[in-house]
Each structure stands twice: as C-alpha cells, then as structure tokens.
Length: 498
Image (cartoon, rainbow, N blue to C red; front, side, top):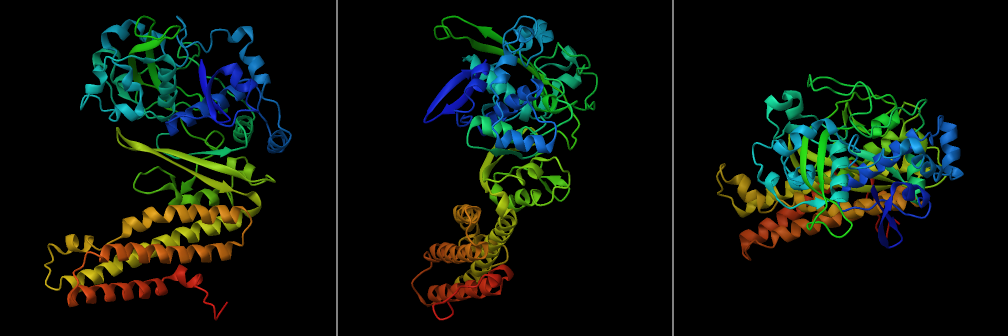
C-alpha cells in the first residue's frame, strides 16, 4: 500500500513499513490535494497509536519529541505475522478500508471511481448531476486508495446512486466524515517523524485500528441514520471508516505493466461517531462553533482563534496545551473543506508560524493584524460611498449599490492583506518586538487601502465632478483611518516624533 512522502526535492512513493523506516529523513507528505495530505497523516497517526508507539502522559510526549523517540519500530509492528494482509487493498476477505459485504452489489450498482474523488465529484447529491459517475476511465489503484482515505475523513452527506431498496435508506443517504465540518490543525515539525511525534497526543488507551468493515464487532449495520458510535481511543478516531465502499480491481491492457487500476466503485454511507475532547484534541472553536473552512473568508482572518487556543485551551492534553510547552518554534498547518450541504466548493489551507515563547505576542499580533485589515476595509467602503455621492449626485436608490460597487475596493484590500499579515506573524515568531511589528503592519494596511482606492478612482472623468469625487473620497479615507480604534493604537511615527 503506497504512501506519498517527500525526500528532499524529489517526491517518492513508499510502502507503509518504508514510510516509518525513512521518517527521520523524509520531510513531509506531499500531494496536490490538501485533504489527501491530512488523510495520509491521519492514517499514519492511527497506525502509530495501534502499534503502541504513542505517549501516555504529557511529560512522556515532551520527552518523545525532544529525544526523537524512534518510530522505525512501527515498521516492525507492520511486518508482524498477525498483520499480514491487513493493509492489502484488494484482499479477497478483508480489503483495506472497504466493506467486502458489498461484493454482491458491486457489478450492478457500482459506478466510476470518480465518485471517490471529492474535487472531481463536486456534488454528493448524486441524483442531481451524475454524469461523472459514468466516466469509463479507470484510475490507478494508488490514486483510488488516496481518494478513499480522503473520503473516510472528509466525505459529505448526500444521496448516493444505490437504490434504497437494495441496502436501505441509511446506506443510500451518505453520512458525514469526521473532519468535513471543521478545520484540522496539524503541528508541523522538521521531518515526517518529527511531525508524527508532535501530533501523537497522549491517551490512556490506543483504541482499535479500523482497517476493514468485516473484522470488528459492532460496526454500523445501516439500520438508522442517527446511530453514533463513541471511538475507543485515538487509533479508532484517526482511522474511522466514514464511508462504506468497495472497489473493483483490474489488471489488463488499461493498466501499465505491473500496475493495477480501479474501474468500478460502490459507495455508500459509513460510520457516524461522537466527538470527545480526548480524540478531538486539535479542534479550534470560535464561540461554541468549531472553526470552519470558507473560500470567501481566508483562514488567516481567524488566526487569532488558533493562537488563542494555545493560550488557554483548558483541557490539559490538547494539541495546543502540548506545543505550548515546547522550547522551539514549529508551524501549524490548518486545512478544511468548504462545502454547503452536499456540494464541494474547494479546499482551504494555510500555515501559521508558532513559537511557544512568543505565543502571547503572536496572539495579539494576529488579533490586531486582522482588526487593522477589517478597519481598512471599512474605511475604503466608506470612502467609496463618498466617491459615489460626488460622482453621481443624481443617482437613484435603485442603482446606488451598483454605482458604488465601481469604487468599492474592499475585496482588493482583503486579498492584498494576506501576505503582509503572514510577514507580521513570521516577524513576531522570529523574535521581533510585536508592538513595532504591528505598527509596521498598520503602515502597510494604510498603503494597501490607499492604493486600492486610488485604482478604483482612476476611472473617473477628468472634469470638475470627477476631480471633486477623487479629492473627497481620499480625504474621507484618511479621516476614517484616523478614527479607527486599532489604527489609533498604532499611529504612524514621523521623523519629528521618532
């Protein structure tokens, strides 16, 4: 079974035992799909926990991270006789990650493997538009495997193509993957092994590793859409089978020499599990809701919530409690799926620097950095209203919003604020005085706001009306910026006052 890792500049495929044997040398998991990257880490973490290579206490976790506890012993566990065939993707009795009990229905009710791929399938209400399900092109077995484990983690609810009369409504109406409704946070280290150790949060019991639907009692029998199962430990949580799926392998002229392809897949609902603080250790909350992904709202706008979680998580054994005690900087990888009901919009991903010694300063920089961007947007919006009033004094109420949109550069400000915001965080994480860094960021936001408004005002005619609109809009922008609370906290320092 392949796992994709990155060793230096070269991307290579490794078997599962090889992943752990080379984990100290490999840098990270790499794939074009952010969700697949997370799914691969989830699987590796589940295997570590199941192999017993996991700390039990917070003090033990820290010593494991600092002393680079060996992970190559996981390879020995994978090669033990009792694990033979356990991770075989097309095992005749217990195929990895799949439900062999669906075999009798696969030929009649299975469809193209495209339905496994979140980015290509798009809509999981499959009766609404299922052209992609009839794509005759098979996919490589390793690509189908990666798509399958991504489905287990992020799969959406929706109406699958299996008729209700075949396996019932609970199977036909897909369940929702454990990570589909929130942003997943991973602590990223200097190597693949370092990353795995950082995210092996302590737990009294490892729990059960889920490798197939037919080797564990108590699996969902598709009798109710409201059954929730409590995971018995981190191995169980990280490997939850969020889909009931079976793939058909083919090795013929369609497959490269020595390779296997998948040409048919039967996909239905999987498990629904309850969440608890022990397993859901990386969740970030904004109020009572978990941080969610949105393509219309960049993740950096909620970075203060991520840093805030490391300030006072209150649980003692969460990921943020643990990394707050480190003596070195790391990065925090945030990944989420933006989806409405059964429709996939796309992946959202961002990386934030984290220095435990600077976590208070980072939290303030993130909070005030976003506030500065928000206030700059408000100021630009208000200036656009003034420009519209002077440019179109005779406008009607019906077309006022359309005309104002000509001058409103709010979206440009948000788009351009991301890069300086990340520079602000990196400077603070590297040890710069956070007050000075935030003041520099305020200057950058003034420049961005001014430049974005100027670009929108260039379309005004070169006459008295256009000139007046430009002057009044620019003056309004400066008045608005000067009146904003966060900008007042970080005023510009002139040569005379320096």
